[in-house]
Length: 285
Length: 317
Image 1 (cartoon, each protein chain N blue to C red):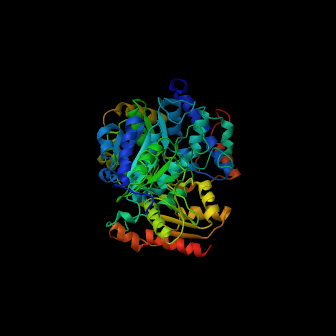
Image 2 (cartoon, each protein chain N blue to C red):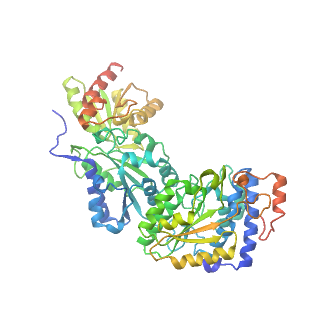
Image 3 (cartoon, rainbow over the protein chains, first blue to last red):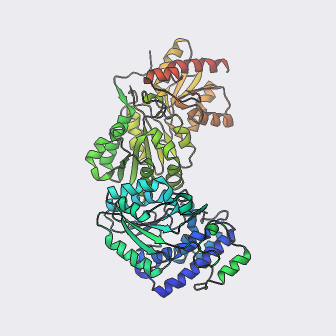
């Protein structure tokens, strides 16, 4: 549970460095995958699994009596798999099977192979917020006071189903839900503002009836204080969204701030150059 | 004389509504979701008795499927309700990823399927839903034939772990299945024993097959009528056993011939026991506005068409 997992900031920083190494080595090993968004969301996953969530690594699908996270933008699976393994859901040696035949670590998260920690398939975008709301409703019916967290991409907010879900959660006072948006401003074809601008995102969520928080998604202290504020806002009749500014490719200078590394793997030389920028703190898998 | 009689006509959707209410009383994990069609789906009694276990989602079917998938995490057994069109085609990707691929215990309950929706016309008369749903791995596909069978199926699917597509309709049709007949998923029901031709029917076409049998008997043709209420998994043994005896086949359904029950039977027979086969269904067309009986005649899904198909297939034997 969280007391066992909870780490101080120094340790969280070290974990982030190792998780970034895992991401790069997994994507390099498969020569396939999505490093950019994974690197950008490293602090998000590390702060949740090692500090915020009251969770149980002895996995059961129903997740009663624990906080749950749903990842809607499933393509950033490398960061999730690394964090799940590093927090004890499965052995870190399994990370090397990512995207390979007969693996439980599918390109996009799936339940079919029974990988501990995954409760729904995601990848086709726009669906995860609805699922998270459904589970939040189940928690209310079960009298379970634990919370449901969700992560979405910003480009993903172009999907209509997100806004169906946003209307529903506010209209039905789903106030045991903390959603986050990976607000990195990038999508496959370029900057979100150029592809299909989201306009004033904060005003959109507010007008849909959500409590809106803003954070620096690459700053552990900002995330931790934002989640602590978010928890205080639960139970007050409104769903909560955290607009989390991140930098795609964070931690590797030549990958940062561009959509170029959304979905391609580094070469041998690029991997070496990237790993040189990230300390091996917990031991590579 | 027809070998089945009825004293009452009822809509299959009402069988769903009554079944859901009964289920709600005996299983408190059952929850209902509806996308602004509570009255049409006959979910009002469940909503009234279990307001905390009923979720009015509004006109947002994609969100409804996601909510249902999420509700299973925590142990609920969600029953979603909307028209068959909005239960399948509109939300195919949501069902595929969040429900079928994720192995979620969601019961997708779909009313107003097929041409017999009537006057609303082709926008709402889905004839492709069985095909879409049966192609999804893990999905069970059920199309009951009358009020009693729909009620029994509604109750039975709650006991089955995994996603189910339950398809029913709008018009009042004869009630001829015994009230307390147990519903066994995947188990075909032999309604009339015969030796000349096997007629496999599902949904509203089962009654038409019973009427066709009477006409065929008058012409000296001894038809076997089998109710295939579960299209997937198909009762392979029952079908092969019947065709081993009759050596020719007619399928009958309120659905496109492409992708329907007939397709599944033909695949089974081609691989195991090839036999001449005729298909009664809608032949690659959209429907139109009209009364259900008029539409069934015009689009060739009537007792008369089953008789013709049986005579044709017998000549090919």
